Amino acid sequence: MTYNHNFTLPQDLLEQIAEQGLDYLPELLRIMLNAAMKTERQQYLGVDPYERSPERQGYANGYKSKTMKTRVGEVTFDVPQVREGNFYPEALEKGLRSERALTLSLAEMYVKGVSTRKVAAIVEKLCGSRVSSSQVSKAAAQMDEKLSAWRQSQLDEIVYLYLDARYEKVRQDGQVRDAAVLIAVGVGPDGKRKVLGVSVSLGEQEVHWRAFMESLVKRGLRGVQLIISDDHAGLKAARQAVFGGLPWQRCQFHLQQNAQGYVPREEMKAEVAEDIRTIFNAPNQAMAERYLAETVKKYEETASHLANWMEENIPEGLTVFSFPSVHRRRLRTTNNVERLNREIKRRTRVVGIFTNMASCLRLVSAVLMEMSDEWEAADKVYLSPDYFI
Image 1 (cartoon, rainbow, N blue to C red):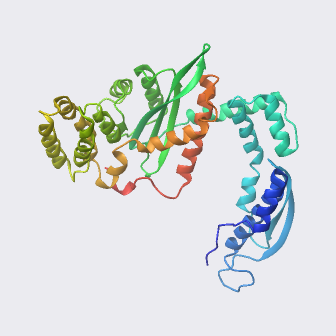
Image 2 (image 1 turned 120 degrees about the horizontal axis):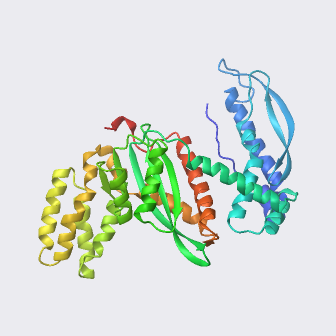
Image 3 (image 1 turned 45 degrees about the vertical axis):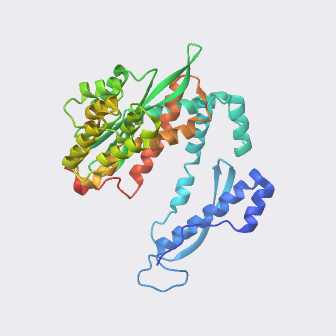
């Protein structure tokens, strides 16, 4: 038997939300969570109400009231009971984490520069209770401790390592500066993705990248078979120093973008882009190298700088041909990390300019830890582990 996990709000509830706004949130939460718990019980029992079946896991035994403090105030839920077994609804268990969620919310508001007075006002509106500035500061400290532990957690074997950077604006010594946010993502032997680490510094120089990579190794990173990244000078030098000898796949997307800077005329850009795609989409390395040689020869006279650049740089994007064909599409570029960057941007856009690098690291770490947890909890793998070399 199957159950519908989707819960659609009745029209009358939608109308009440529209009329009462925040005042109706407690009742909305109660209705939705009660419905989720009821569905969980039905799944646990394995039968429809009043259905007879040898597969039945027990019998429904009414409901028990339970009052909980949530972010929208105190709410009394109807917890479904089962006569036999140790059934306890997971939806309610998640609800018990509301105090922790509130603490993180306070800390995130603090990170974004919201004044303690405004934080107190927001919490009072949502929860009907006050918080002091010391409580807000304590929440931020608790968040720092948790995020620091995550950044320093022990690593294990990683098959593929993605490295990338983005920039956020921070205040430093009275000036607004661009801080480099370095990110490492790995795919383990189980085929799942994991955010390995993050670091924030004023610059993307070799010393920053090198310290970041060395920290990954010290935390136990091993078994890397391929590194995927762009060709930034600092990153390249650090990679060669820390991971010298490991195969490197230069991001094909960035190679496409870089090539456009060597095209002498605007009307040639589309043709050049198509020629490069033909090389990257070749069925094997031998054909890719053949297409490259033909393309270099094609532009020797009409775009000599482009031809020279392609001959020197395009081969760095062909390393992927030495790896399983079923993995290549996701090893060709750093798009894996680019999606993370878009989520970080969405969350940091509301901040604008961070007060310092510590606050930037705090929020970015929170976003990345959340995304990494989602990846690891998902049933679906990112790359099939059956094809690892």
